[in-house]
Image (tube, rainbow, N blue to C red; front, side):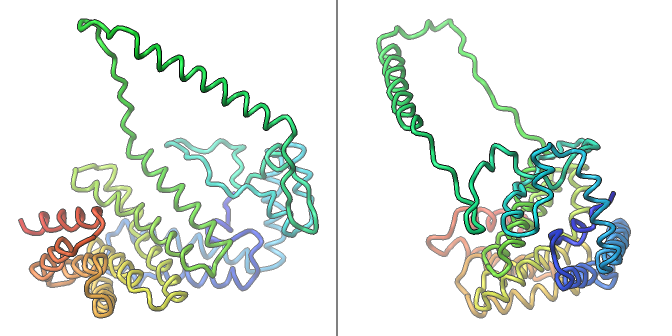
Length: 365
């Protein structure tokens, strides 16, 4: 059963106005005109996404159909809940009911399908929510009286053991030269494992924006999470990773999702030129990799505005250079000058300097 709330990226308790706004935003994002000149695979992927968005909106915009859908969704989730959780599900809608929902990021799938009984919207376990309710607010239960003495005894025991280990290490003879010392090398995480970590960050950031939609930092964090999740895959393309190429084609629309998040933050903080520079970089990366010169030109326009307001900001210079090589024809020499200026600014973060040097080496060849 498709999760229409997840497709429209709204909370299950969202009102009709929020659902309509989410539908219009997603419909505009996947408008065929925005993908003009893009790869056929991306156009087909966007078409399927638009069809799913239309189906979800047709159900959730109709009160009667939405009520029937909610009942079906509840019946699907209900068998997987424990008895205490079923009781929690019958509580009236309100602040206390929201506190019972587990908003933590879902565990990574690790390249496996979710089991049939997997619950994507679980409740907190009974043990983790044992608290008393007073005047509509959840009040944490007091700690038992035996906890503090137990911690003191545990700390004292740990100190004695630690002192014994240190003294043993000091007086003990060094191991013989012929004795091999085993070195434990932690396994290198796979591409999918790293992507799962990025996905957790994106999910957590979306949840925060749902809870505090008027906080600009929440939207900035969401934009950064989306940006990082796709730029990491883009960096793997230089290694000839065929798996990364397929994933990157699927995640190209995330550049535009990051743009939407940054623009929401810019509405709340109109004078933040760094956010405008991040919008520019996202648009230019999307325009460059989808052969869409219109998007690249739009990004360059945003970068020029940010540069005019903050000509010595390293991130603004970095994004401006990216847009200069994304437009047609590319302005490579001017872009390299911008990145070299990043290296000359004192106190710039090492990560920005490293990225500027990588871009200089790449486009100087």
